[in-house]
Length: 452
Ligand SMILES: *Cc1c(COP(=O)(O)O)cnc(C)c1O
Image 1 (spheres, rainbow, N blue to C red):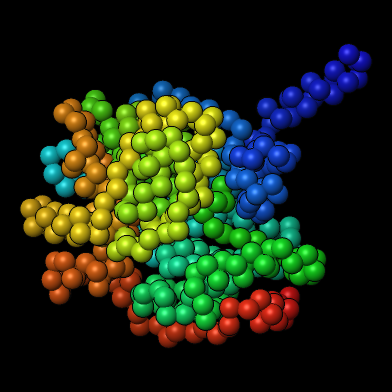
Image 2 (image 1 turned 180 degrees about the vertical axis):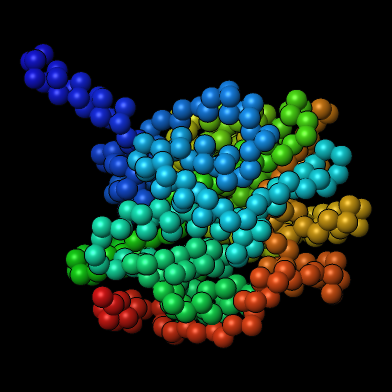
């Protein structure tokens, strides 16, 4: 090999492996990119999902000291493993500390089952963590950018509110939330239509799929993309899903007895949350098993049983944030385990529950433990109640506050038994502002044409 070629290979090796984290696509059909490209681009150009090339375990000293650290401090140590090579330490620290202006408490529900409450953020669902982190990271990358950046997001409810609130007031960024008219709950709608400032809500006369199709058309519109800068903020973005590893560590830190085997039960839809848990395990978190807790949308459950993955049209359930028929992050799980079904089934156990079973669980936990679950958390709890073995401690992710689903929950536990937290109540007082559009690209395009 020629000397210069060898030198340049060495340098490439050094640059690739020592200096910065590279992100590859799960489709392995496009060159690796930097964190900045992965975050601003969202999806890889071969339509795959970005993955960090390395996951280096945290040192044992971290696990010795974790019990005395708070959520922000723990998360900062985890964040450095993912983003430390790309973001200066003080900036990363500020992003993490600003993102986590709320805690994720671990609440004991019965002898060996704990609820990891992820609903204490501004919109009362776990998506606040990823959305707030992504907003701040994007703002950091766009500092040098003179032009306004437009974030387009289609939502069936929770994503729109978390993204809108996460980006609220961030300079240089304007968020456009597309949602299906009449198909989101009142509280969800209020959470992204009352904000004003740099948030605009577009009410589309169509379904969620129509909203998503409009956003996709904009991303394929080369003429538009030459004129304005657009980016997406859905859960396939690495800046949204990786930070979700933070609270798995926080849960473990808060456990009194760390000697028992730990099982995490994750109410799953697009599988971003569960995938983040798998990353936490690769970083060294001693997790014995994960449960992929599903409603009747049981595609992953069937995969775990049979090794065959067959996407299906989604089925409507009362745990509607999990009504997903082709979970986008499943590609990341396959990639992490190199398509080895046996290895996946060794770490992840599947369950699936009907609406009646979800209601039954909600009611019985309310009656016997005095703990009010939301429909998604109920799926997670039930999986532990059925599958936990002797000597194991179970933690389920309580992904939203029950008041976000007041109607469903009150039908089960009785009217007046769901208390709305003050911050959700405050949204209800705001005045709804939205722009109405048909589901045709022409009218949405005319709107985009007026942006600068
Ligand atoms: C989004 C959401 C889920 C599903 O999370 P994934 O990461 O997509 O699996 C579960 N519960 C609630 C309340 C949600 O908003």
